[in-house]
Length: 398
Image (cartoon, rainbow, N blue to C red; front, side, top):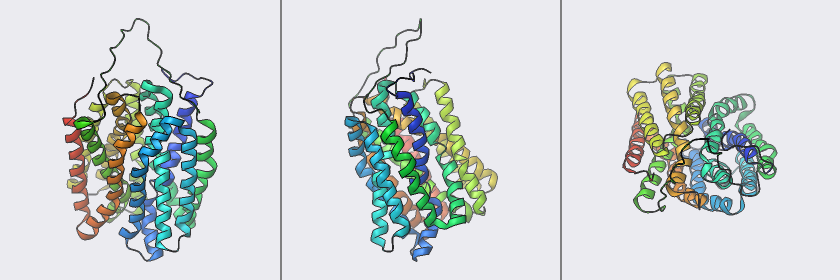
């Protein structure tokens, strides 16, 4: 496979390792609150907004820590940073079910925020760029194949764990996943040194002119950061509230979980299409098309109701769009700003995204409680249209 030769130094192994740890990392850190928050609120006598505030704090801490984590990976590699992040995440997951005071609950989520900044997509993309350099798009796409299945795995597994052992037992299991699987894989299986692996030249193929790289500043940076931040707000709010919205719309819990599980295959399908085309479409166009499709998905759900068919179609459209915008999030900064200092640039871009991601669960909970589910969907539509406008205004560097 172009650009993914099996070398003793382990670049190809890094793709396999990060594929596994992205499924597990997203599966235990990001997706469970969609199912656990109502149980946590009931167990402690808190409002849903109070319980969700912890998750929002985690996302905010992740945004603050992202530049530091990605910068450390730029300089020292991903193995130790990501392994340490997994252990911090395990500690946070152990605190949540044991916390008998709200401040302890918040502390657990703060630790999970540090873990998110250290082991999810942005640090994984930074690790891959450090290894593969400008040939990183295909490795990034391969890793997102696996990451796209995280919700498909996490929501049914979380549902089963809660059904058979309760939400506290679920978090103990999740902590074990980070300690015994994710941390060792990061520590011992990731390459320790940067090894750039250029794709082999194709015989007879013309030599492409080098891409024009622009500084990561000014309007290009602002538009890119704002576009990804608006998308992150909608992604976070959807991941946290959609299953509950579908249940209030008339679907039973099992059907809602099934609908949510459709996101993953749809994400993987569009990522596979991107991979098979060799990434020929510029990531800026990928971002534009995906935002347009996502806007159509939310407009459909907001206007056509919550029948099983409409909900399934929404899930497939939303998953397909999110599948490739995740690739764009890793590939667009590389295409426009270059590979030098990639981790620092991605960290700067991700900070506003993760701050808005942090606000989304709490903000939409407030809107739902004070207004309606319809209001939350309309806010999501506005966020996606803002992202689409930003990417439409952004001009590619090549």
